[in-house]
Length: 499
Image (tube, rainbow, N blue to C red):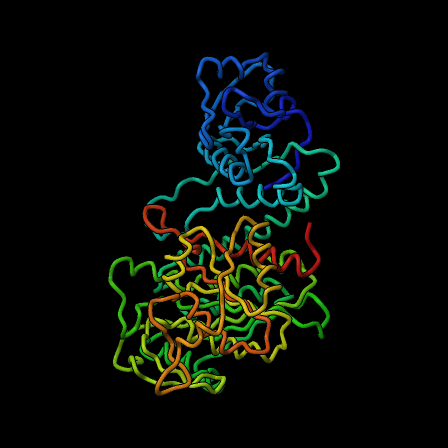
């Protein structure tokens, strides 16, 4: 895919398709107004007759219009001008891309005026265009035996309109957005694979392939014996009932000097989660193949960082397991000892993500990190609290929490900062061990984070619960690639490599 900036008047562009937007009440934004003048008022005529819809996201294809070099024109509704914001702009651009992909157009000039630069500056405009384009082109890696649909014809997208002063920032945004989209696509591909393909060993193989592709990434894989030597009793308790051996994956990206403290990303890698002995309800259990999306997002974020050659040290830690029932499976009431030496009473084997993460968080200490961020499809309680719009964010450091929240806002991959106080940790008390792994229904997403917080003292740490944002259910079932955009923006800003 070739992504370029657009400055020329739309009627002069030699693309196969041009796109403009229209507001309610027949109001034309500047780009559409200028094109309409070249078309002899054709757009205003069609609007007056009621032949064009201004409803947000609705498109209409017009062909062979005299007065422009392109053979096709896509007109997209922008809704009311007073409420046209960044979210509406993204919806309009996504609708245009979907409409163009239904044609055999090989090139598109995006002339949809954007909201004020306060809401979408030139750099983030370029990033958004790149990410939306690659997202529109993404195809699920299905295993169907029939003929595959032919590839999309679209090969070039021109993004504008831009002033001369904004071109450099927009080009930088296009390049960064393409790298972020590559990380998102890797995360989506891994999440969409079935659990019998994407096993802990498969994740380890994907990590090794990243290391082979990018010389800046060093990969180390700990097998079950090595994990036992690290005394990761909580992790091993989760994998006890599975025939699939666990893996602990370590990726070290070196973009800064050797002594610089790294950012450590820890991703939950449960490649399939039955709930173990605390068996889940069969309804939608197939979606538990997505329980490794935290791991996938770490791989995606590291891929993006390597593509951008970020001047930053980053470590990725992925505890990869399968959670199954069986004769050797951990039972409710069992007590295990974590790598940190703390004992845990396992009251619910379906609260397994926090068990593998706590051992990984302890492992992170050896890097003396500048910051630690764990990413996990951790709790259904977070979905109840925030739905599918925001990732849950909990942290022991307000500055780090603000960094991540701001990154999510800039990247259109939003997170919501939730409370995390000792009150919640007190709910984890156990009569028989240092702590229990669950604390009842009340504040379930926060008490899960409070459990992890017991293993992060002395580190600047944040937890991202992506249970509601990492995948879509229903007819559109697939991975979303979130929160790779948030993580990538966070890393880009940390490195001083942003727009």
